[in-house]
Length: 128
Image 1 (cartoon, rainbow, N blue to C red):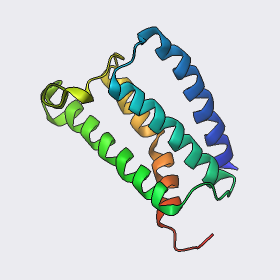
Image 2 (cartoon, rainbow, N blue to C red):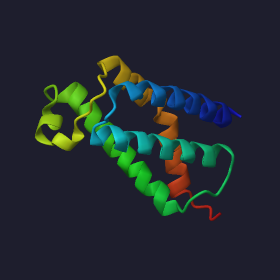
Image 3 (cartoon, rainbow, N blue to C red):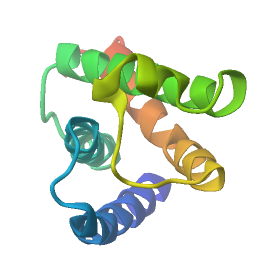
Image 4 (cartoon, rainbow, N blue to C red):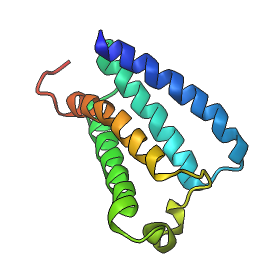
């Protein structure tokens, strides 16, 4: 039951957030990638919450690794590296959407269970 509630909360926040970022159109490359990844992650939460076989395990593994890598990059830039260090070094990582430190940390914590669901979808020993 918790996973279904979590799915609907994330879906609602993602829909509201999608309308909010229309203010920043045209979006930067990383903004578009992030939006696609968020909807793909939402699909993973749905698949796990409702016990549906949506895509292959390889897809969920790949999505899990990409999400974890981007989260680590974001947290490194937020807490360990100078501000915009990686974004200046790799311009494709730049975003047009202004986010403060609290927003980034909140989103990271909010998506923790989603990463766990992706992990379970990609690495579970059960064959569906």
